[in-house]
Picture 1 (cartoon, rainbow, N blue to C red):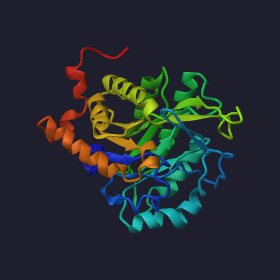
Picture 2: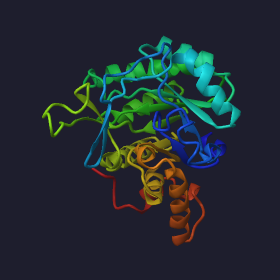
Picture 3: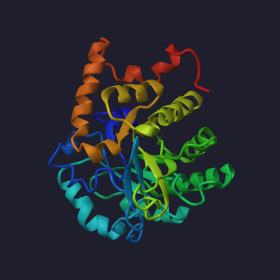
Length: 305
């Protein structure tokens, strides 16, 4: 489904493109494979206390606390703006229960401009991220099943997962529950201190690390899931900043790539990265993107351990 419906393998990651208005002066949003919104909840959320984002030596540490306008606010002001411009929109959803995910999906399923739904099932920046794998897999599977039942079959459901020792098994659970693809991966838990106050730099103390620091981890996660579940489409996410980074994701098994932290520093990054990707392909005598998907597995010396 993904291979036939995406015009380009470059998407934005949830929240990193703002509402879309912030990126519009820098690039044509219709040239993206899809624009992914910030994670949406049924009710509006004010988010976490400031500061919510700080730079580190190899990326950013953040915790927005899920700030968003809620379903009604999104349908009233953000989605119409994107639909008017004919942008392919992936709406990121965040819910506390399978029923909340299903209600969001039900009310978004036929909304103009919605190309797909991405379920934020990652727990890397939550206080309960250490809960047992079986519990996490159970809840993720229930959420996906509830959303799939509430939607037209033609609307893709993407499940965004956090890294962890049970990742392959969780990916299998959400695939069996009806996910059309998995997004790998959410950032890792992190902490940073302010050099002046010697206090935690974020208002919430801990947060999520995103950017270059997680690229190698994301590549390994994509590799492992593709090796175990080669028929399950994977969208790679985490630290992608160049055309070669996209190639690495595809070689590992991704069919598309989300750009996140790169947009915060360079809003026009998709334009540059798309050109670099073309140059990478030409340098290796090919224009066949599909041929790269998972190709690293056949030419590698073995699975990463």
